[in-house]
Image (cartoon, rainbow, N blue to C red; front, top):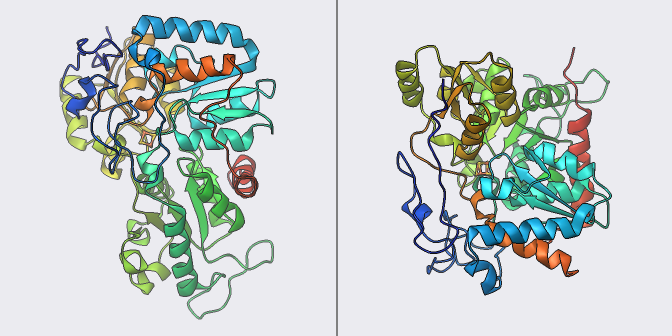
Length: 443
Ligand code: SF4
């Protein structure tokens, strides 16, 4: 069997006009443009490009203009610059590459993994002066929180945010929390208004905030100071179990799909999972609906994973009878239900690695990771469920030009694009992260 992953020859890095092959079509024609040629001013939303003039949400960090020589360099020249700078820096710098990162960047990574694995690697390398994080902003923040004091965490392009993380801002979550406290009060109560006590003899909380790793440090800090916790896509069930042991219900943000898929698998009925729309009064719910809830889901989603559909799964099964469909739990519930399994990027990777040769996998996650799995496992047939190429546009902002620039600046003794979480925020966020690390499933 051969791999049939849709080829993703992503953007011409230089010179302008280099052909980009996007077989099957792409979700945005701008993906084939020169990355440095975006004349449009900053505007709302994330665009697909990598230039400092590319679109970004209002108020998000912007990338200053980098020297012309990085923008004029060919892919080969940038590759050589990065390699030489890394050799000069040696152990002084470690480069982290997320699974969803483009190949021409990830090839230079000392460690490749999901956001949590990379944060753990940041913690495991106190000898490095700098951690160059080729991922997105919330990941660099988490690495800064977990790394030792004195280390610099660098995001090669600070405009590499995450549209899902942006969907829950600290002010909106604080307002939601105030509304929920007005409805519930701080402690869990039964139908007669009596306080419910926990196994430890203390009153159960009325609601426990749970934030997905894909959120700002400010939201992790919010969870830390309000009895809450952080989760990843690998441990969401364990974390919800932890939360139900301490509270009557959960407020889950920002990703509604991970929250819904996880709680449903734990037996929580859909009618007890109202959606919280921050633009509407009480999130668009009545007080009674909130009272009856077990998990209140924030109205957030991943623009990459929401593209997967049941129709794509049916097509894959028709074309490849017997294929195994694995999707990421950021996908919509119907898609997770129709798949053979769902799980984190690590779950997907391990499932492919553990399979007997000759299997066919239809995978619902970001295209760079799917293509890499296909290249690494020619013994299987591996393809992405979505025939339209739609990489994570914010990961995509880590162009090799920025990586070359930040590394050469380090060689020159200058730290640029440092991501630094304020001490008080980091302290509270650490509380929520440490709770996650300590959480174990209830017997
Ligand atoms: S894949 Fe989705 S959740 Fe992950 S960084 Fe990109 S936009 Fe954010």
